Figure 1: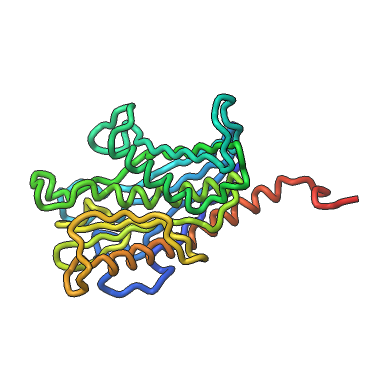
Figure 2 (figure 1 turned 30 degrees about the vertical axis):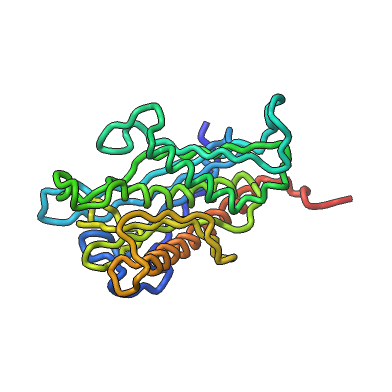
Length: 300
């Protein structure tokens, strides 16, 4: 049976939502100036809430023998709220458990079926980000499970640096993956009807050795990434629930890898993603409202 979902997922121009400086926009042949993000909710009928996010790859660079650019494809399911086990101690707040798992075929190097250190690290950051947005005291003695499956993940380094271990920041592809996990998990929570303070979106920014900053860039398309930042951001409240910094960073504004500038760029990316998340949540609400009986809102 095919689940009833919307006719088309929100697919909005990512880079046109905010006014970006010319040097923040990716050059032609690497990332398109109009980057589309597909986000759809309600894909798993058996779950309390679900969502699917896809960041399509940009157009491959012509006249090159390099492999095609990678993309991001993630699915998220939410189960709960559900009662705690009988032997569990009393908790006045909702207990959240977040799990992130790469599919075995998600990356070029085949992943195992047991979670590795990078997947556990992503799960910890995702759980911390979601705990800051969920109103946990509304579900005492209850728990909720958020599971994100990465169907396709971006590579961690530029194709030309594969054989040069010291010229690129290790595991920088996890930054983009975390920001996508935060956005898709927030959409799934909204689809499940979990009360939250605000819509939570993720954004990432990368800095290269020449001082340029790239928003949501694919690490496989940029050479010499020196620092990276990923944030979980609530746009309406202007608050950050989680931040992850990695690489060569400095508080000195005169240096290329400035922490404040990198954080501001990641927040700018999260604000752009908020527009797409709002459209997906609106579509989910309209779909659920259409299923209600005609006299559901009438009282005697």
